[in-house]
Length: 226
Image (tube, rainbow, N blue to C red; front, side):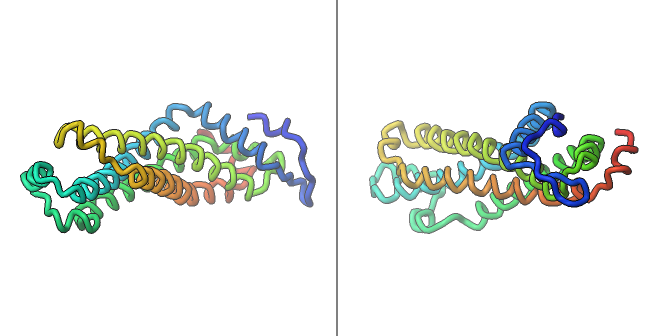
């Protein structure tokens, strides 16, 4: 950690210092590199949850496009799979909504737990920053930036995995010819919504751990053994 080398620093009363956003991003990236293992575990949980979300949304868009073709062969295959041609084109089923919501909640809890563990591992680091004059708001900002970086990258990866999975399943069930009717805008919206939701969930998950870190007293944090 090279917080003491940060420049420029703006002095404020009480020997505290305000670091620019660019410096905060640099420190957040360094922190993620140092804790690469834990960062990958956190990213993995986000990727799994967002991949499932993107798969569900993408599959729904593909089904609507296939139903709109009104092709007898495709309709027969859809009905063989127990898909109601009228209901499938309206919206997500209650079961799908429940499964997606559950996966998102599990992801939220998992990310919160991972970040809380990260705080416990970084007690001395946080204490050092605060002893050097870092504001509580800077500590919160640091954790939120890390959450945004991990959340957006992981959600993008999950969106790609989910969309590719639903395309592969569609090709396997209805033939490669069905891919000619893929709704690009619908899949794009599904992927974009997945990235947005995953990033927002990551930020929400980081709020509680970041507040814990910001409220640490510098002297007490330096005394603790990790």
